[in-house]
Image 1: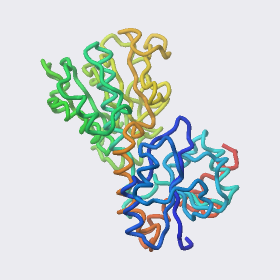
Image 2: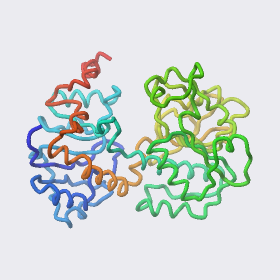
Image 3: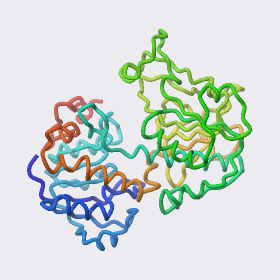
Image 4: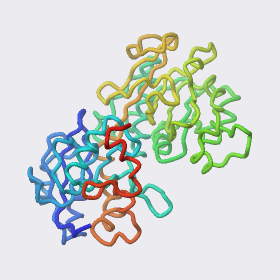
Length: 406
């Protein structure tokens, strides 16, 4: 990559708007101090979790026209009509799985000779992701699940997370809640699940083992979390191997059904591959002993492992009901016979200040040294989907997608 002299932070253009930003005002100041050879400009925006004045007060250059910048940073997908030809863009592109709704965007990237670096593929030499918002998705998703349960059971009302100034204010709302003696289940073991656990631990809920969760009754709310070996097994009963499951998910079947019969609030935080088994089918939800009344689908795999996730929901309208008899969507909280669903697909956007600070610090510490210096470990290279409008070798499988042939 050519020497980078100027970096620009884009105004988010996806609708509904996202209030996150790659760097907070304090981090923009730190960037200038740590990388004095590179100028930084921020495009004004009335929507960010941080106001323009917060950047201006720290002496950060605010500029509408970023055409002089070499690299442009955003968060969500960029409006393809706004691309500046020949530039390098870095954002969550969501094209690696050939997502149909982003085909035109990738075509525009190719057409405009753009270099695209996708945050999702910034990894270390062992394939571990270096930067993500997963923790914040889990934290807000669990909060929304508890919020839905309060409304569903008529016990309490929590302020929406996006109305809270930050994480501390959100957690303050959890104090002294009157939760009924429900059983709360989390699936997953990564950053998302750990974020959900942070929120639920703020409630001081008793944590029990999966075995206790299945077998015992409690007179207080309890929580358990399942790693993959607890909700799937090899079809030939071979010993569970996590890496084998990741690479060969079609060789596994679900063992989740017993948990359907005892869980009240289910918070789904697992990674799911389309070849993986389904956890909750439409027929499961029609059975008389199906007990789950609220599903907070943080993973939000539409038409995926959980039948009730018919569509993603929005920050403004996070809940809807699933009617097990018809398999159709109904208004939220419209019947006790329904399952209430939370399936917001941009949950970290509800806590934009905290999530952005966390993200920006990782950019400063783990990404910018490679982007602005020597990429000797291939961090930037592995995440580069196109270079000057051409698909790089690891991503040439996207050519049919770009050409519109699939």
